[in-house]
Image (cartoon, rainbow, N blue to C red; front, side, top):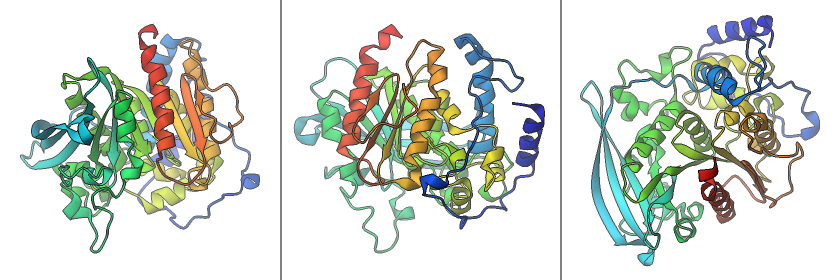
Length: 428
């Protein structure tokens, strides 16, 4: 990457503000109209040095890329927030899921330096039949813990009253149960932990003050510095706070933690997994723009659309690339590469052109060279596989039929991949 290119990119970032977004920018969903683009070379440092070893990657290139994503896309995660977290077991049911699992509901109370408090609720299912410590899949939900299951004793998430729109059925019990293959995961020996993402930070600029941002001194989403974190960064931070609790659970294998997210929460899972190495498998389900998909393809949802419609998700610096993806000195294949030598899995849906399935696959493919530094195997071909032909190497991928969703087929693929990873983790 030449110095002129870097200087131009930095100038664009420094001039970025909340203005200049275009939520009505044109969207291309015709593959024949994708223009030629050039991806930044994953293994070439900003000074031109070529990375040839895992040590070089870890000492120089990985920190460079992590800094780029922190300062120009998701925002910098504070090293110290000053927030303290207390865990309280609210209820425990040893015969949940018809005896298949022990259910625990844990209240998280966050206290900031300003003495304000905020609460969130974790739902955890642990398989009863498993011997010893078990792996765990951690995943946010959209409308509350109670929507992920029909179990009557699951409490409503604290953010329901804040976020539920009048007359909406979105927050009713079991409303999104089809997305949660609890029984399949439990039968396979996996615990599952979920929390409503609004409990950490409401997904609305006007309501963020009712979440973790209320505990942060001088945080104002509308007047942030160019590289100050937004909602995705805060949600990712929340994933790590869930991990903090789970490593203390005597039945959870702290070396076998998985972070999984769908759509905007797929973006979040990737950013959380990049930053928190306790997550040994990082799974993106239909995460699209700002997640797994290559931005420079400008296919489906693009940066102008996503920053225009969701200005609170990313840091303000990301706005510089609105309708200007060609100027980006990074792209999402480098985000996926930052998971190495841990494992990353990307999933797409055939009818989800908004998330750019081909761009998601290519991103996973071009992350491969980072894995090769560790003698691990990335995806073997630049050609996207056919529907329902999962690719389970050290980088995983599948595309299924259907729409933007999470299905039992997705869960089956994820569990198969995790089985492969954790059965051989001692060899890594």
